[in-house]
Image (cartoon, rainbow, N blue to C red; front, side, top):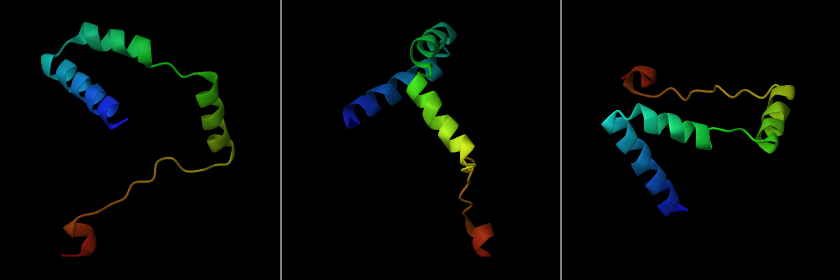
Length: 65
């Protein structure tokens, strides 16, 4: 799994670094698809009103330092 994540990260960073819009667009068309299982899971979260935008604020300003 770690190898797959590293490979995907490398690909994304390379595409960004090259500014390769066509390759990014093709990747989004191929992998940017929500299947019915994911849609159902997200609907459950929405129906139960579970927050999905929680942000952990950190830093010296928050700590009062």
